[in-house]
Amino acid sequence: PENLGARLARAAASLHVMDFAGALADCDEVLKVDPRNRDGLINRATTRLLLRDFAGAFADSEAVVASDPNSFEGLYLRGVARTSLEQY
Image (cartoon, rainbow, N blue to C red; front, side, top):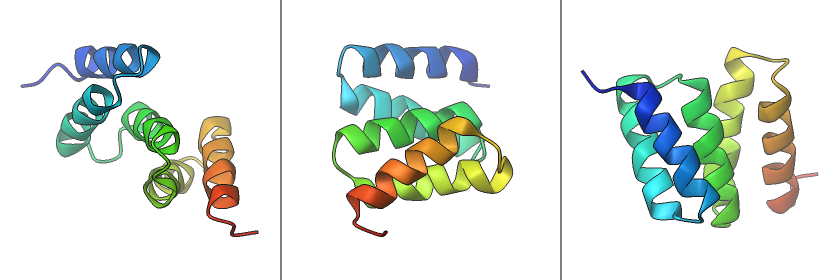
């Protein structure tokens, strides 16, 4: 089985050096194995925001908030995505 922790770490490192394609690829692989993986969803939402894929970022952050309504990261990312989509 895939080492999800290593994939998540590489996704975060890719995001840090602005390798958005690499970050998305690793997040997608993690989420294929574990569709509700909080860190995978947060990293992918962040990457999608930076790529201006606001609808995708909103969907990912909404999934985080659905599983953890008190997630600061999920609520923050959802708010940024919603504002960017002009859904006030």
